[in-house]
Image (cartoon, rainbow, N blue to C red; front, side, top):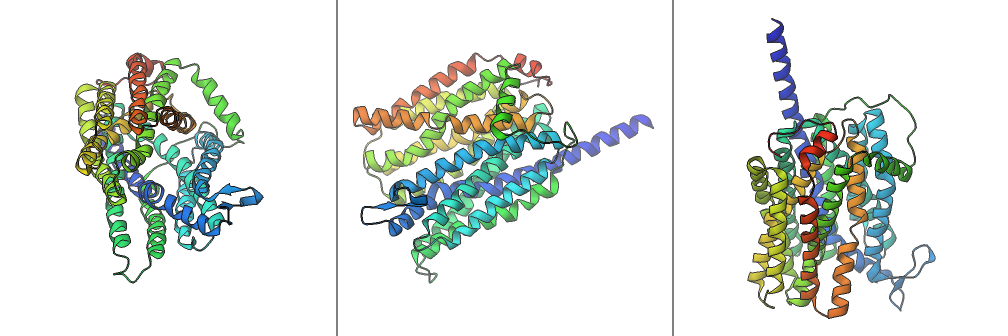
Length: 449
């Protein structure tokens, strides 16, 4: 009878974990439309046009009295949102780990971001300050929510399942982004047929992303469970001091830090390729906006298949080997991109296809591998460092891209310079003994890693 009871309890726990995993996938489904439709496609050009409308005769706007070129306002707003997120993430992470109220904090961050994004419907005329404020709030809230969301991974998936679960989450996000982007492009391209102006169509697309985010965030908030914190209550340290304490704690796990360094290097290369590929396509290859948007959509669609395929490869060959293989694929893709002929959209779509196939899997498996290296009970704090470090390094790739172009006058030289991030990242990751790193973090070592 005792054995049967234990077996029943184990089955119930497994079923509950499956239920949580399905809920967890849906947060990626909910929030990814913000990254795709809002940040990648619509908000940058639209907010810049609003700032242009509000600019003086010299092309400047004056937020809080400071002269800012209208064309720089969007970039400065994004930078400010990163600073706000860097301060908030470790503070929220410390509160989540101490109190165990992670789901509550996830809900607050998610609905703050969703509400700010929905509010972009009112961004018209010369309301550039409203747009900047909503962007800062939405972007910082998304960063905090993603940090909390990622920190659930080691709690809802046993070690041998994390690669698969993480890959499915990324696949859900890319599928969602593709679906909504198709609907947005139909509305935007045929706005006259719907009786809308171009501006109204953009505002509906922006607000629709916020409504989608808020609607589907209900699923994870219903299914995810809070676990007990390290203490029942207590004040948390200020954000940067909390981050410093986490980094000091990480020094007791130098192999975890070694992996984090490798990830920061190659992920900076990935993020720079994503952000600069459209510049390369338009300025060097002479491609039109419709071609570039179509390429973004293609990347989203193929990233679904890529994430799931690389998840299966990780089950057969281990996450570390699969990530190393993806870094080789990134290097080959960039080398091919260097030789793309100008004015040939077909070959640009081939390049986008290569990026899509390795994009989701590289990031999903990095997340799952890092989850094995986090000491139990410190998931949110360590994933805060993971996210903060990621954003803190995200300037290096664009800087190298810009300096290379400035010195050479060639976007081809600039794009090939990014190979350095994948080569160095490969070398750093190859040196990390992940099995020993997992043991030293106090976690069980999966059969295949």
